[in-house]
Length: 228
Length: 229
Image 1 (cartoon, chains in turn red, cyan):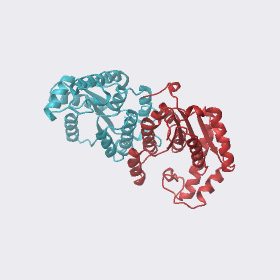
Image 2 (cartoon, chains in turn green, blue):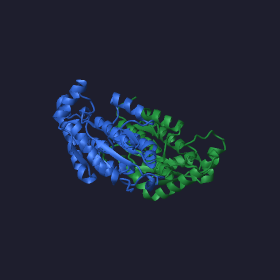
Image 3 (cartoon, helix red, strand yellow):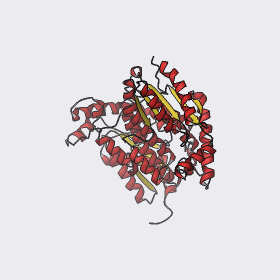
Image 4 (cartoon, helix red, strand yellow):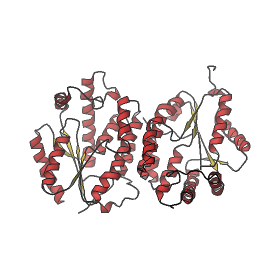
């Protein structure tokens, strides 16, 4: 159950982390295209996307039934389902797995909600540390305006309304994101994040990201041997 | 007197010193007589004027339906199942157990985290990981473990349903293709794990091979000291 010996795993895991509005999803999408077009075996996975537990998560969120602990556990269940059924088997099969948000998202959000940091780190101990964790660092104000300028419909948990920071969703979102950003910054060293300056133009960031990947991973050895 | 404590790191935002009720757990396999004993205890307590609340596994509003569905299909991995059960427990802990204890109720738990922990460990999940996971749990005032010989469990299962339960037979872990053998092996593994936990968590081991009446007298006698304590 706990694959502590990751040396046997041929596949590689690349994770992107950062605030909403940091542009990380765009960057990982471009990485995916770049790898695919070279015929490399690549799989993309998103946070909070397992079908099986989606139903429970939706119900919990809609009825605002979730406490910090159940919120954390239900997301971890979702992650475990993807981990056991998709990510780990694909890594074993020699895929490059790209994760749009990984366990650090849980560490940042859940500890902001009051969950114990050590408890959280143990909870996700079954997950393999990525070969490369790219943290898209952006000034808080930039990230906030990228999201809030469009005046989106902010969802209850997305805005961190459950923390009771403010009764105004936009104000709550600001405060919540500030706290999450602080958690991320504290994790840069702890988990050896590679920091990417997310204020740069998209193609400049992408060039940097591709270079980082090439220095860490011998890409040609991940080419698919079967033609599509 | 109040001596509640968390098993580990605890829950955010819960003042444990305010929990004045009692939490009493009955553990044991299916067919060990748990629900019969809980019913008898409930009557005995209410006759004396104590308010009680029942909890058990897979009863949360949050995930119990989804868990039941997942069990039917048998498509989830062990790690995922483990976390699903933990979510169910946490939901009941925060929404039922803690409010009841805060109001001074006696909470009777038909199984608790120990069954979940034993199931995980028997399935190869790391013991330390499981213990840390359940660091959120409130330590009960007493845990009664109804220990019943697996042969007797089988007799009772057949008397009740004429069939063995897939999960209670541990068929998901491939101990044997034969359900009967698997049941015996699985129940022995579970019992071994319970005995291993017994010292650590201070279980009160109850000989469940006896008649329900004799067992309930035993439980009531022991319960009396918990009420006075």
